[in-house]
Figure 1 (cartoon, helix red, strand yellow):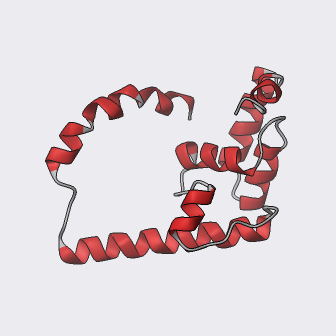
Figure 2: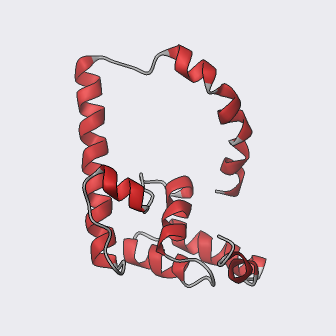
Length: 130
């Protein structure tokens, strides 16, 4: 955001790399979030996006609209207890969706993937930062 951009930019690159690397290899959910949010300008929502795109396990994006879609009320202040419940719940939803999809033997039509190929290639550089 325009408000957090200068704060994020004030983090030295070597610190960003070291902290992010430690966060991504940590086995502790709490440590991951504590490390990422220790960077200036990185709050819970930004840390969640980093884990979403770079983490090995499926991480949800922490966003009011995402919480609305699962009928969750956004807390006044995000803490580790809320984050843990949110991650667990969204992973359960994702697991059920995969099981139901597999049972129905359905898959994404290839035409949808074909139409979105430009989107996929335009964002492929995301993988290089993870």
